[in-house]
Amino acid sequence: MEKLKHVIPTKEYESQAIDYIKEFYEYNSEINGSGGLDRYVDNYDGWLEKLENDRKCIPNEERVPAETYFLVRESDNRIVGMINIRLTLNDRLKKFGGHIGYSIRPTERQKGYNKVNLYLALLCCQKHGIDQVFMDCDKENLGSAKTMQALGGKMIKEYYDDVNSHCIVQNYIIDVNDSIEKNKDIYEPMISRDSKSISK
Ligand SMILES: CC(C)(COP(=O)(O)OP(=O)(O)OC[C@H]1O[C@@H](n2cnc3c(N)ncnc32)[C@H](O)[C@@H]1OP(=O)(O)O)[C@@H](O)C(=O)NCCC(=O)NCCS
Image (cartoon, rainbow, N blue to C red; front, top):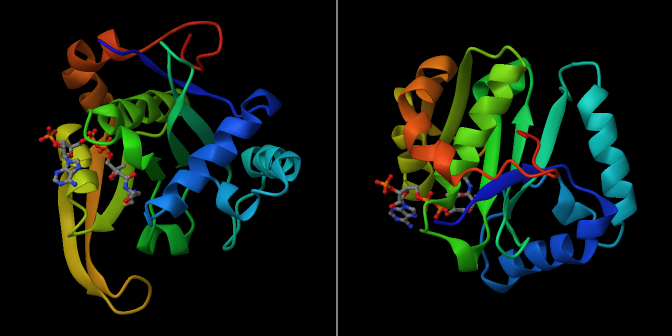
């Protein structure tokens, strides 16, 4: 069984991180949860600086404190996914976006990695004292909807979004402590707790 971990982005991962984003362009895939890395492919150092600022920013209507992690596979140190966790919500994120955005690189999808990605994010939310996680997705995005459902996500609303995405959006809520308790036997064996893991 492959083990995965959330790792804080550092200089060491520069070429892998750029390669990760390029793969989304190559496969014409939506990029999500990258903490804006796609806008910094020519300025990785600037992106690391941005992530530092994201962590400690004072929440306002434009920005909220957020953490971005690479999802890294232990066996080959490959970045297989990313995740962006908003530690508080402003009105804009309450309407659209919620607490968490994520992605798995196109060549590593449908291996169950995003469910581990979300489980790890729930552990992070628990550490930050977030009891309920709000998330949303396009109804057609079965990979995302099923990830949330697998982790106990309950759909609380479905509506046509004529402002941002122009598609049917589903809003989900996850009870963090309950989800971790119910799912730990499944996901704990898939988590690497080596020295680089944020959950060590
Ligand atoms: C959505 C995404 C993160 C899913 O990643 P993934 O690693 O393939 O997901 P997993 O393998 O963990 O699968 C989670 C569940 O979704 C299902 N699933 C995954 N992709 C699917 C697809 N294309 N069609 C139907 N079901 C799918 C899996 O079978 C699994 O369901 P199960 O629990 O019933 O077994 C990935 O497709 C992605 O990065 N997409 C682009 C970015 C994006 O859309 N982010 C989310 C924005 S809301």
